[in-house]
Length: 290
Image 1 (cartoon, rainbow, N blue to C red):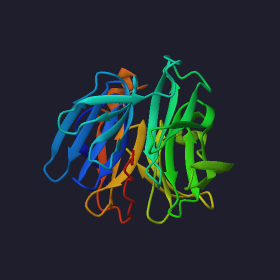
Image 2 (image 1 turned 60 degrees about the vertical axis):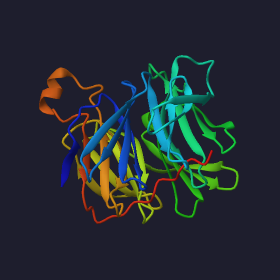
Image 3 (image 1 turned 90 degrees about the horizontal axis):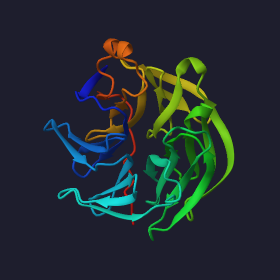
């Protein structure tokens, strides 16, 4: 069912996003500072080296990339790889870095921060609007991770990994405000920790399990677990739908926090995986409109 898409071992592979314009997948190796690009039709794998930590990337309406770098949010030219940093919400917190980001239905970029040493409650979740203005949305997060929005743009789903909870907020697409926080469902301790997340065309959430050897599918309305996709590696970090018809599930993984002895048993840790022709369909990634 699951196969290796790119046999390259990222240390901390994360944040996959499918570019429907060029039929390519982007993802990051956070601590290595690399942005990876893969075209499944040509089997082409390229790397953009930023030479600093990169928490997430998003597609831009002009065809280039928005990247959350250690030095701040930056535009990256897809062809020349030129980096132009333009704003940073936490220049006063050098012990923090970005971790996971995604564009909301109106093309605003949401990005979380966390302590590099994972100090509890040291991070926040921010929103970057089309005027490049940043506002803080959630304070006191520890490991800011998965984000998704419902098809009617009225619900925002979010993960702060150590809580093991997938929470829901009422979402106002006009101004990006969130309210009425509640728990949609929680991951049992035997399943590791919830990490990255995507939403499918039916409104069901797909959650990557860090330390849990799986990706799971959930109904966020009822809290029911619908499906478990077993993985050959422990630290499953994120997932997104791609392919021409958005029916292939791409899954990022990591070697971080795995001992040498454990790595011998899971040599594919850090690779990009794919489950082709899942029978489910994803939703297109929203481009940043800044």
